[in-house]
Image (cartoon, rainbow, N blue to C red):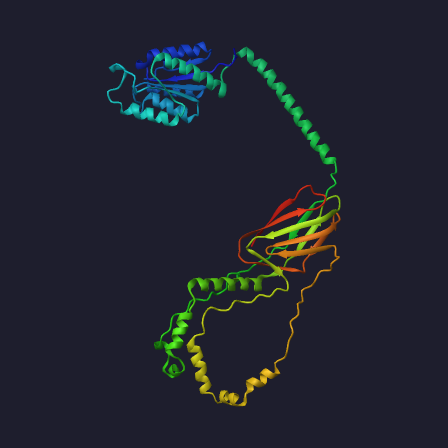
Amino acid sequence: MKSTKYQVFLSSTYSDLVDERESIIKAILEMYHIPIGMEMFSAEDEDQWEIIRRTIEVSDYYILVLGLRYGSKTSDGISFTQKEYEYALEKKIPILAFVMSDMVSLSKDRRDDDLTDIIRFRELVLKNSKMAQFWDTKDQLIKSVSISLMKQIMQKPGVGWIRGDSANADEALSKELSALSKENRELRERVVELESRISLKAPEIELDITQPVIDESFDSYEKVVIPNAMSMNDVDAHLSEYISDEDIENYNNAIPSLGELEEYNSECERIFRIKNYSVPLVIEVSNSGTIKANNVYIDIEFSEGLYVYENDEEHSEPESPIPLNPLARAQSEYRKQNSALSRLHSQLGVGSTFAQLAPITHAFNTKLISPVNQKWWTDLDGQKITVKIDSLLHTRRMVFDDEYMIAPLKSGKHTIDIRVICEEYEEIETKIIEFEI
């Protein structure tokens, strides 16, 4: 028999469940535990609630038995039984609920004439207590209470009470456990200290990438808006001979859709940021370990908000989807007709002369080609750069700063995923570098 005794609070209405309460108290005593309930104090006296509250707080388990009587109400508008139940629920006391079946035949003095309150209370209990059990007879109730309480004690043992003379033995055991715990902690600290003295021979590859910066003009690109459709009413009289209805119809038909213009503006803004905020991509690789690293491969993958490109790559704005306004062309024709200088240039054929003098140029690919036998190389594939280093001594570093450019395409947080492997590593090491731009 265990020395711990558990206090069990029994809650129910009284007069209709006198026999059931007596049998439950007897069953708890036979299990060598401590039953307590309204028999120990007057539950009808509302001034006694402070005693009831303290008693529930120090109880290990709470047993609720419901029949078909609700009981007298407190000033809160609920019965003492419901008030006790809600307080046990609030204090998270383990609750064992036993609800009388609706099919049980009862005499009038054991049931309320108006069952509204008790039905509402029963529904509350069944909702909150998923393991609530129904009972039909007293014998069935006592058996269910005994089995459920025994299971609850085994699964969730409470604090309980012990004899005063056994407390000393428990105190001695507690001191011994405390001493063993202290000894275990000291031994663990000693192991950590000894392990720290062992110099593990391994490289430690570290990476640093220079962060691009932006200023207040980063979002200053002025987007192109869709022009209005034209009609002959928009044409001044002196230009009417230089523009036709067909010219205006062709112009109106060529005006781009909203989606086409958004795509154009998006690409123009991208080119604007690349041209104005690109900086050389500086990658610094170092070895802070204790031995040389051999056959080092580093994959550096940039998020979509960062654009990486080779430093000889050129960028130009896309062709505008906005058609040439026929009014502009008509005004040009009008000025030609009214300019003697323009007629003179036309007669002398100045345009062809300049064309003959235009110099002939040749384009050369100026991209630097890395030597075949060098000790390192880099490769750009989309948003990923791969760096290969034959070997890197410990405490040494290498800087790559003349092959690529980097430009922020949007502000905010950006991530760079790093994967490193070398001969000395047992598995790929992964790291993340974050930029706040």
